[in-house]
Image 1 (cartoon, rainbow, N blue to C red):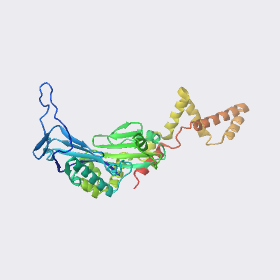
Image 2 (cartoon, one colour; image 1 turned 180 degrees about the vertical axis):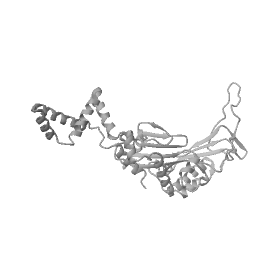
Image 3 (cartoon, rainbow, N blue to C red; image 1 turned 180 degrees about the horizontal axis):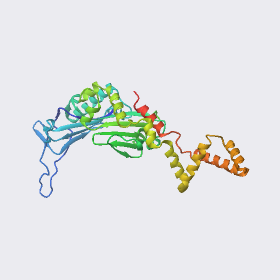
Image 4 (cartoon, rainbow, N blue to C red; image 1 turned 90 degrees about the vertical axis):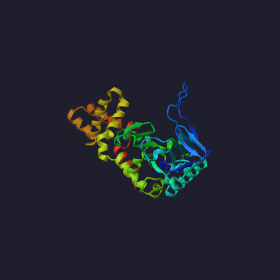
Length: 352
């Protein structure tokens, strides 16, 4: 349920000879003058290290050390240190499946050990939550792109929507909702997908700022230790957030603003019949509705009696059958409506 976290270290110590890469403060080549004031990153023993920032990239975590700022934040009076990692990836090598509370605690311990090996001593359970990504995997009934027309009409609150083919993203500076084909992502990265569902989709809710984390998560505090202690509340927080953002519409509302199956049928006729698609669609749609009142043979007999023309009745019946085939021949026509797709995903993502 919890994937990526970004932590701001409450307190830390950088050892002398730590395995950190330092980016020096930029300077103007001609004059040699620093573009900004030289900032002290850390002091260890008799050594002081200055620069723009320092960082270390472990196999499954990333550490960044930034100089003090003049923002007025008490914590910013000293250098700020952040570490980012995926709980499942730290524990298993991939972030495919969620970890439980014990797994989350073990992931923290492993990252803390990795930082110590790099020369950064800290207690990660005391670190502040800066970003938290929540997720749920869904075994869908249809391939990912079958849901694209649905995602195109869903509108998360005060967010821009982007379509990247195998990913849909709704975003602003505080939160992101991301839906993507997890199986395709794993295959493109060279990971095995044996045992995973054929249509394996991922729904992520990303809290990008500390205040968003506090607003969304009911874990009882704002530290990594609080996150572990209140780990069970993450699923409830996720369902509430997704219900408020992506799945707040009723199924009837989705059907109303999407045009349901009607638009999809029109698209298929346009692709099949070109510039005469609308006339063809009107004729075929009317014929289909007519055959719901009576079968073709009954309608043929009625036309023959009224027209007293057997050939005209026969041609009419032939047209009815051809119009009926227009809807059957377009095999790419979805067998489900946008409403049913919405109801499926809504039920699976928000399931307790």
